[in-house]
Structures are given as structure tokens and as C-alpha cells.
Image (cartoon, rainbow, N blue to C red):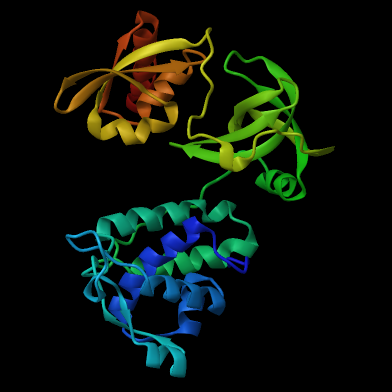
Length: 323
């Protein structure tokens, strides 16, 4: 629940945009029901209603007339603590997820449910019900196995909650092992691989670690010293180094959102449906794994060693499949 007595500007805008379609669909709604549904206080509901009454779309002359504003049934609001819109502007219907969109969201929530703390599992359950109820049609039933973590994620969540560092042994792409002490900031899932975003004490910089290369994970007594907060992290998984391998690909534009975490740099537009991109990698081992995330939608162009690495990886996979 949003606990502050007054909502931040961004929260007010988000709630304002959510209140209108909800009220249009459900008609008069009690203040208590709105507070429960949007996980805010009744005082904050009243704040949003007051803001809603002053919101609208200006007319052609740039000024607001009565018909340009949302109109609230104030008698019902003041006497019975219920909210009803008498007139509205700019919103004609409740936007809904398609059945396919809802199924994708449900599948994602089911997948991460295995790593969510017990205290938050009820939130996942509530979200699943809301998404299913808010879809234009019943979402397709998908059997999704919960995510399996290669390390004890409870150590990481405990470290974040207590603002203490963690220590572990890490094997990099070249097979070299080192002991690292880091402040864990965020877990990211890219394809089938989990990554730990963190502030590394040894390098005094942000670093990203693959969880399946971590061993001997333990909680440290050192307090957080990271100058970077979780909210300040970008969506780019890795910092580009001068020693990184830069690989060029031809990619279907439909696949670009699926590889956005790798920060692909668009080099040129090949045609209406494909682009040339460049992606940086710390080592060749990562290139086939990257390509495998969008099979059939990507082709390695250069350098030649990257092309060979993907060919060898594909041939080995085919040999195991046909054996």
C-alpha cells in the first residue's frame, strides 16, 4: 500500500488514469472498495477524486468549459462515500488485455512465483486474478514450471533487506575463478539465464554476474556501500569495455524487443522487416547463447570467429539431438 499521506505526482497521474476506466465499468463504487482495489488509503482516494474533478480536455479556445471536465456526483460522494462519474472526457471504454497478452503476463507471473518470498505470494495470486478478470477473453491455460534458481536466492533477498553485502566464488567466461564481495541490487532474467546486478567492492564499479557461475554464496557482515541505488540501474546488463568482442547481426525487427537487454546498436536498416545491429560480448561463449534466444530471427555476420562459434554450437546440438 502507498503509505505516504500525500501521493507523489507520478502516483497521482497513474491512479488518475486507472480510476476513470474502473469507474466507467463498475458504476458507483464505494471509497472503501476503491482503496482496497488500488491498494491506497481512503484519504488518498478522496485526493484522486478531487483531482479528477479538476481534470479534463480544454476546448478549441484553450480554456476549460464545464463540459470539458469530469463531472462527479458530489451528493453521492459526500453523503454515501461513493464515487460516480456523471460525465467523462477522453475515455470511452476500459482498455483490456487480449487473451494472448493476458496469457503471456500470467505465464510470466507463474514463472517467477517460485522465487517470490512467501510474504509476497498473495500479491502474485491477486495479480493473476486481476489479469484474468481484465482480459477481453479468458486467457489460454498454460502449464508453466516455476523458475529454478541455480543459487540460494534467500541469501540474496536477505542481503537486500538487511543492506548487507554477499560474498561468493565466481567463474567467468574464461573459466577463471575469483572471490567477489558485492552489494546485490537486482536480479534480471534474460531468456533462461538469471543475472545478479550489483556493486562490486573489489572493482568499485557496477558488475553483472550470471547466477549459474556463482558458488559458495554467503551473507557478509559488511554494510552496503554502493553509491548506486536499484532505481538508478539501467536496463543494459553489461558495461561495454574496450576489450569486448563486437559482433554484427542481421535481425528481424520483431526480435529487437527480445534482445533489448543486450543493448543492440542499430547500424543500418536492411529492409522493412530487418536491421543490421552490433552487440558487444565479453567472450565468444556468450554469442551462441544470445543467438539461441531468437532462433530463426537472427543471423551472425561478423567477425568470422563469431560465425564459426555459432556454427559449431549448432552442429554440436544437432549431433546430440540425432544421436
